[in-house]
Length: 390
Image (tube, rainbow, N blue to C red; front, side, top):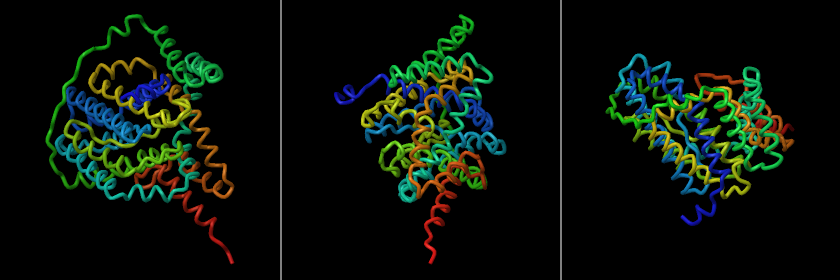
């Protein structure tokens, strides 16, 4: 306990809060759509938010504490998008069965060590290039958002540039404060009073098994979670210098999915975008003290789950342009660092560039996300370039 108190820093606490803010605000609407497609009523949707908050909170906090590294977990946003378009033909109990099945597949992948072995075959420059490709659109979102809200985003960007020069460790904090202050100054003074402050309740539903749904929805849910969430999530840790064993992390997210699926916790995985916020220099200069951001994120996720609909209503106050700009600005340093690491070695540069371009393109074959194809094409390019001709 004393060590944790000694390692606590305001910048790490803020990084955890920003990760939760962006994680919830950027994709909670997709979770709502998935829950509605499953046939959930309003009380059950609240249960989904609570289960997801508790699951992410527990895994972030305890895994970060155990491994002394910023282990950030998240719900599967691509998985939620898949569910929103796939669950309309089955019952809610059968949807719960799908979630449990996907969690079992994830647990087996972690316990077997297969995922860890595959990731060890990926050279670091290619992992950095893939991560830069995943994060690239968030950097672009700063200026896309500026087109529709030039004053808000402009103030946030100027705040970042000035703070980065004067107090670099707290630059993201000042960006967050400036954005919130601008939004509240423009909004109706009574806006905050419209937020309902009430605790939700959990709704347990036992799973039912539909073989067609398990194969047709459960396996795709498992695949998109692995390829679009866990692979970039591991790349974040490796590019930041953390050699945290992957298999136990995958196993725990799968186990958490199984336990919380009947409450609406449809899929948990390693985070990429929010993990990058908690793993960079802006979080803390000392990598050994960045685990505090994981503990912070765990606490804030738990509080978000406890508050249920109140938190969702609170996040809805902030415009999408502010959330997009905040995410992009918070990730600028990480994008730059990964591009540098990806292109530094001449022998890997072309393969890394292919990885980056394929990932940025967003191509998807067979429902598998571009992050996976970026790595695959990059490895193929690297293998061919290393063939020695007689």
